[in-house]
Length: 108
Image 1 (cartoon, rainbow, N blue to C red):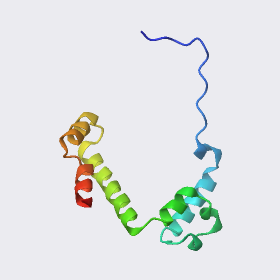
Image 2 (image 1 turned 60 degrees about the vertical axis):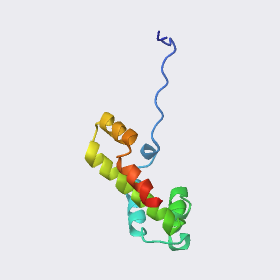
Image 3 (image 1 turned 120 degrees about the vertical axis):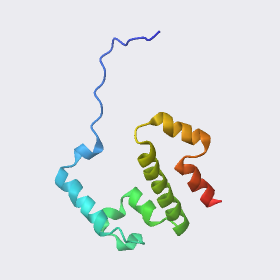
């Protein structure tokens, strides 16, 4: 059986994106788009150099970048094939026919 708590539920934390004004988020998005071609941390403006995700992406090897792009493409293909049909997507994963399986085979 389920137990119900008598304590009041704590409010959900505020998303990090809500802590910054929309204009600030837009400015950072524009900076990222403008410097997306960068292949070195030195090519980035100081505002982006401190971002751990940006540092990771810029420091990826060509092989890591290719794997990431293949994974993104497989996820997009799965979204187009299965949409919100979780059962069909799970069945494809179990059967080995999901786009992610093809990505793994290509890496071998």
